[in-house]
Amino acid sequence: MHHRVIGQIMNRDVVTVQADTPVKEAAALLASHGISGLPVVDDDDRVLGVLSKTDLTLRQAAQGAEPPPWWHSRLVRGARRDRIARQKARARTAGELMTSPAVTIGARQSLAEGARVMAADDVERLPVIDEEGRLAGIVSRSDLLRVFLRPDQEIRAEIVQDVLVRTLWLAPESIRVEVDGGVVTLAGTLSRRSEAGIALRLTGRVDGVVSVVDELEWEEDDSGIRPAERAMHGIAEEWIRRL
Image 1 (tube, rainbow, N blue to C red):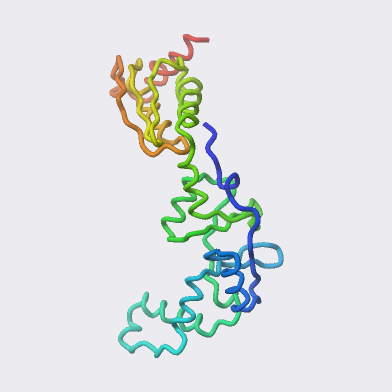
Image 2 (image 1 turned 45 degrees about the vertical axis):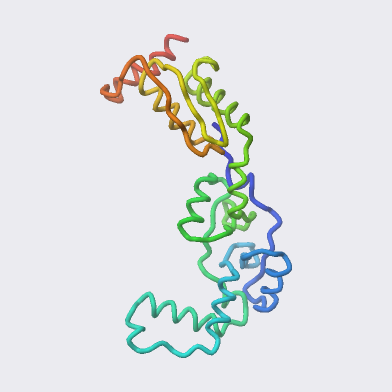
């Protein structure tokens, strides 16, 4: 299967600023382009950090704030948060206000990896870097969600050709494949239980698949066979017979 990677969906036209860009100028760029954040890069296009609307909000909120009570500073996370807030309140440039280090992703990483990074770090946009660590583009949550807009017929065709035919060496009509709103139903009878497991796992990894409904049956339960024995007795044996 040919999974889409970040580099295929990213936006290559990226609005950036440098560390010495005034905060007011950076804020104007965010507003004029209607974006939630922009990468801060050096002269070699390496990402130093990301300046977001959240950073600007923290700066505004921290201005004129009173120092925290002495007992509050005992909390490590609270003390660190307050220290960052005070630093941002004094920030005059993008480099002083940005969040660093930046959360980035590689152009060759999968869409699923991109989604996991965004969820784990709670970010809306990810700078995309190339093999040399330079900015190559940017990807947003909406970009990643577009994969779920793939037509059902396109998803079905990929499952039939890549999972059933090319991986399991089955005839296209041997298993019934139905796709409705990204939900895939696999039905039919396979030779072995292990083949059914492979079909289900690989189907779930196809871009655009929301979930997989298992209606598969099998003629032989080979779940108790050790992996080494299964390699000779299972699918590999089927391939040898077809050579």
